[in-house]
Length: 164
Image (spheres, rainbow, N blue to C red):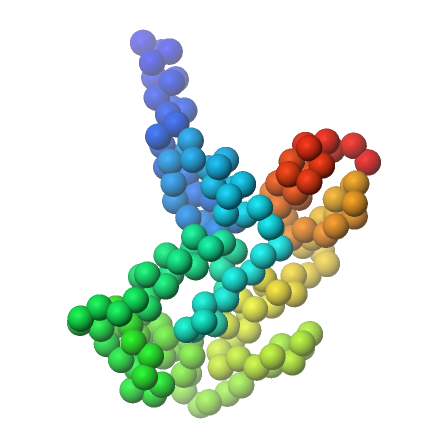
């Protein structure tokens, strides 16, 4: 009976979260997802409609489907005309893209302007990660934002060899 309980604890159909893009999936699909969706760990994809950044094509596609795809009962932002699937998404958009006061937030590293602190923070996190938040490959010295990305790079680019 304990063997059955133990095997149930590690069920391959349990849901897990991708540590890179926070997408939920069955445990048995995580390895393939990491290889297929995150083979370039430095990749940053930006939504053409709202400038939000994503770490995989899959999460960008899901964002576009949920937030931007036109549906009959869509709601429109009266400030810019962008359409959303619900008032919840419209409200988030207004708070982040059209904050009251019209303040502009400028990236100190590249000068890009943002209408909200949230957008600037997201940009800084993905485009200009701090040196302290990165790790170097011991073989080619390429820099990565996380150990997960480094291990994925080593597995793909150096045939899994961790030697220096």
